[in-house]
Image (cartoon, rainbow, N blue to C red; front, side, top):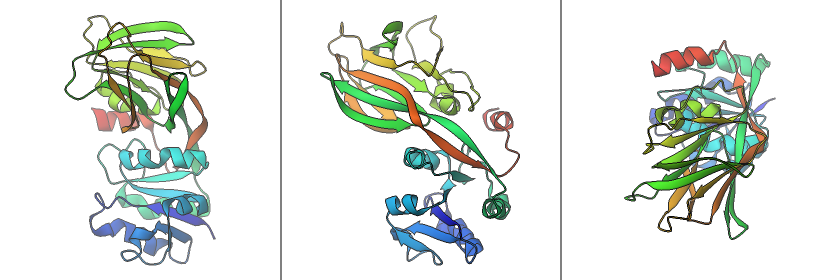
Length: 281
């Protein structure tokens, strides 16, 4: 019997109604794994830590929006764990199943009638004094942004040691194709087909007339630095919306293509471009 992990979003699933709906539908058809904190709210499941859930599952169902998917993307990618997203949010680029089609999607999941789409991740390291102080992975984007209340920051972007551009801006977004429809597009970046592998670098509110996004190959290392000519420069670095550290002049944000891939389960005739037209028009 297939072991299916389930990650709810209590803030979007009122009273965990859809979580219970899934648990009831899978009862007797699959072994359902949930975090211990849901033990008193949802029956017909096994309970444990999040790590135990991810380690023990054959696949994962995530209930929520794109944010809920992003919170778990890196850990799922490390385990090569395929993920089915059920959309309780607004945009839903990563969560393809809508509420009125939950049972149909579950039937396909149980019968093996589904595809798996692989998505690129980035590996990011913060380097200080030649030493790595933080290392993590991101599915959507790496954002270097000014500290709260600060003025514009001066940022430099390099690829394999070659200067790409200098930006005077509120920050710089390095996005994957998956992340091109997130923060990047709000800053004026292009829409990229998520099955491609590349980086797109887009400044945030640049104080420059001619600045544009830069599309860069994935086999090169990107390095983001603060211009050392401005010693008061300071910034924070986020990976998929979570702050991972702060940087100052002399530090480096090193970005490479991750060895991991995020595996998205596809149970229907999902069209990325149809979603773009519906969600962003």
